[in-house]
Image (tube, rainbow, N blue to C red; front, side, top):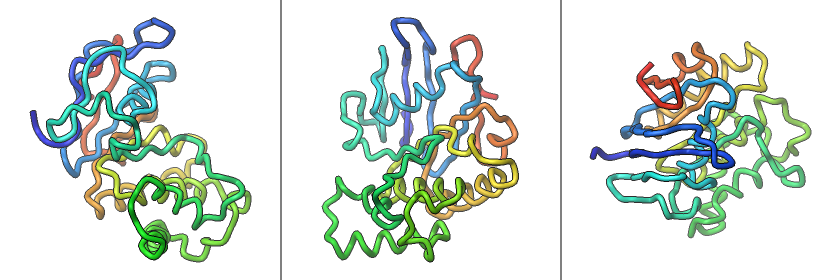
Length: 216
């Protein structure tokens, strides 16, 4: 095995019906991998299994050659961003980002410093005190991205985070996210049904065909 993420001989099902079989994929250090597939093909379920919020039907997940299949989500140290930003409406932007640090041992001062760093990275320094209902869709997704990146995840899982945005905003955010991940050196697995989005964001492309994953 190589370092980074490896999913080996995995099966994903829903209500005892196979979605994906014999899944073998890898996300090497520093690489962005996109997984293309239509709605209902199992790509989001696979991502949730990797992140630890859903269980594989069978198979194993490794990080740096260590089996993490049985680890709970917060111990895997993988970030997850959904199509909907899912921000806490009663928290301002800074507190939403700080929530991503809840499982770390950081002090209050260290958390404040990390929040400031993330606000600068995603270009939202002037938005720290705003509530989610005062944000645009793109701004909300930037906050969700910052929250996922706050604990410095080993891997970032992106579950169609641009799907609800209009084309111009989606194109701009795809470019910005690629630049940000490249700058940070954070590997990512991005699932989408949009081939153009996948090509512009990712270094490597995979696709789902007949319940299996192959190079695109």
